[in-house]
Structures are given as C-alpha cells and as structure tokens.
Image (cartoon, rainbow, N blue to C red; front, top):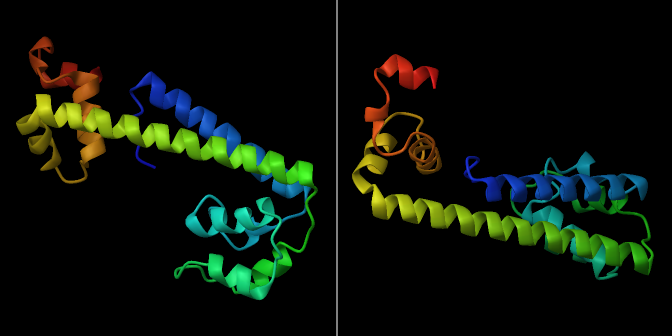
Length: 166
C-alpha cells in the first residue's frame, strides 16, 4: 500500500483502514468463514469479489466462485466453496457490506492524498525528487517522504552526521 506516513491524515486513514480490516477478519472468523486459509490477503481483488458474494446473498457455487478468482490465486474453486460453506443473516451481510465500503473509502482517500502529495513534490521540487530516486531503493513514495521530512534544503543541518542523527 502506497501511503506517505509523514502526513497525519494518511496516518489516520491508515489506522482506520487497519481497524476496519481487523473487524472484518474477526467477523469472518466468528462466522467460521475461512477465506484466510486460501488467501494471504482477503482485501485483494479475489478476496473482495468473494466477500461480495456473501454481501449480495448470492449462491456460493462453482460458477460464482470461479468468476471471482483472479489468475494468480492457487486455491481451487472447491477449496473456496468449502471455506465459504456458511450462511450469513441479512444483518450480518449488511454489516459486512458497510465495513467493506468503509475500508474501500479509506483506501480511496489515502490513494488520492498520496497522489496529491507526489504531484505537489513533483511540481515544487522536480529535480530534487528525481535525484533522490536515482539512489538505489528510493522509490517515488520514499523520495516524497524524504522531502516531506527533511525539506528541499538541507542547509539547516551543519553536517551529514547531524542530518543522519535527526
């Protein structure tokens, strides 16, 4: 997940998204729905598609499950059908839907904020941003974080040791 961890709004969104993810995990466990046995991330495209089957009250059958599985998933439709062999009440489906929508909203907001930060840095500090990205291992998000933390002018630091200790 790309997020600028120096921005308080991103941190709040990240924390809320994590809380919601934990709520959904706990809900699925309490309902004895074992998607995590076959998916490392139930918030992947496959995971969210499978959750939508529950939310929409659709039949958990071979065709519906197969339509949800993306190409890199190793588990078979039969394994997912076994993991999802539970019924959810209308109330549970509503709560799951609300939680998933809230998670998706925070993801969208964090992505938008990250894009705005990167666009601002590219506009205001383009050559510094590109220069930082020439360092092996420094991605666009990492360069944005460095510029946000330190600023574009390192003259405030007496030496490289002062910068490193800061």
